[in-house]
Length: 636
Image 1: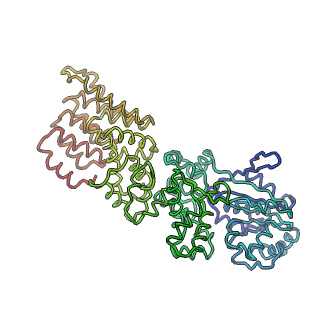
Image 2: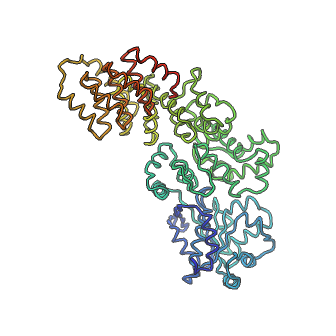
Image 3: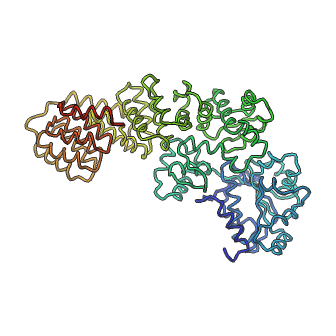
C-alpha cells in the first residue's frame, strides 16, 4: 500500500486487528414488505463512499447491530482498512475518542478537520473534509450512551449519527435505537450481524489450523455450539482447544473456567468501561459479582433456564454493597456485556445469559473460596459447575483428590468426564489417570451408574477418548475380561456405545461365560499358528491385540515366546498390555522375568498394570518384591 496516502494509518490498524478474520453476514429487514435480505461484508462496503472509484452515495447512517462479542468493533476496524484500500478517508470514533477530545460546541465538520491522522497530507485532508468524503465509523453507540448520556459529549455523538450533515456514518450498537430510526434529518439503515452458523465455525477452525478437524467435535461434545456462534467466544474456544493465540498479548485459556472468565474481564481490558464502573470494580462490585448475582437470580426462578430479571440482580448486589448507585452502574454495565441478551420488551427488564454454561460458571465464581455445596455434586441441576469450580481453584489437583477421598460422596460419571474435559490444561498426569480409572470402575457398579457412564462416555470427543484409553479407563475390564474390554473399546470408537448397548455387551459376556467349555487339549494348532503370525506381522494394532486375546483364551506353551516378545517390543501399548494379560491367563511361569521387566519399566501405566495382574495370576513368589515395589512406588 506504499502508493496510498493512508499507508501509515492502515498499518497501525492492521497491527491491532484480529488474525483469521471471518467476514460477517448482515441481515437487512425491509419494513415495507416485512422481508429479510442478507448482505455480505463487501456488499455493504460497496454502499459506502469510494474515492478510488469516485463513488459518492447520498449521505446516510448505517447502524450495525449485534450482541456483545459479535464482531462489531472488529467490523469497524475491517471497514476502516477496506475504505483506506479504496483511498477513502475515515475516522474511528469510540469512547476513548470522546473521553480524550474536547468536542464541546464542535460541528461535525470541525470535528472532521481535527481528526486528521498523522502521515496524511493536511491539504489533502482538508479537501476531503470540504467535499464531505470522510466516513465516520462510530463504535459501540450503546456504550457511548451509557457513559455520556445527558452530557455535551452525548449531544455531539447524537449529532454525528443522527444530525444534519453530509458525511456518511457507519455506527455499531448492541441494539437498534428507536430515536435514530425516527430521525427526519438523514436516512438511517439498520442491519444486524448474523450469528455464526456451524459451517462458519468450521471455516474459522480451518483458517486457524488446517488440521483442526477434531476441534468442532470437541465444541459439539461440550454443548458449546451456541457459544461458538459468537465470534469472540469462538476465538477463545479455539485458543483453548488448539493451545494457540489468536489475539496478540491475550492469554491462552488453560481451562473452561479461564475461557469464561476472559469474557468477564474483557470490558476492562478493552477500555469499554468508564471511571464509575472501574471505581466500583475496585471496591469488589465488578462484572464477576454481577455474574454471580445473575446466576443466582436465574437458578432461583425455578424455570430451569438462564433467564433473570435486572431488578433481582440489583437487589442481590445491594444486599452486599451499601451504595445503590454503584449497584445500578454495575448492573447496567453487566447487561451490556457479551454474556447477556435481552428477552422481550426492555421495559420489563428480563434478560438471559447467552448460554447455560454461564449459570454454572457464575455459581462456581460465587463458591470458589468455599467447598462446593451438595447441589454442585448433582448433575441433574448443575452439570458443569463442579468442572468450573475445579478450574478456579489455586491447586486443581488437590481439589480433585479431595473430591475422590474414600469418605467423600462418589462423583457421578458425567461430572468426572466434565472435570476432565474442562480442565485438561491444568490437571496433572497423575490426577487425570486417577479420574479415568475411577470412571472405569463404574463399569462394575449398578445399572443406573453404568447407564450414566455410557451416556457420558458417548459424548467424548476423539481426543478425550484417546486420553481415557491411554490412562486406564478400561484397565480393570482388561484384567477381568479382555474380550469385553475390546468390545467396549470398539463401541466407543464407532460411536455406538450407549446405555442399552453397554447392557447388551454385558449380557453377551455372561452368556458366553456360561456356555464356555473347557479348553480342549487337541486345539486347532493351525489356527493358533495363524494367530501367532498375526501377532507378529499384522500392521493393524487392533488385529494384533485381538490375536493376543485369542491366545490368552485358547493358547498354551507354544505361544509363550511370541506373546513375551510382543509384550516387550510392540509399539502399541494396548497390544503389549493384551500380551501381558494373555501370559497371566496361560500361567506362563517361564515368562515371569519378562513380566517383571514390563511391570517395572514399561512407559505405559496400563501395560505395567496388566503385567502386575499377570504376575498375580501366575502366583509365583518371585513376583512378590516387584509387586510390593509397584504398590508402594508406582504413582499410577
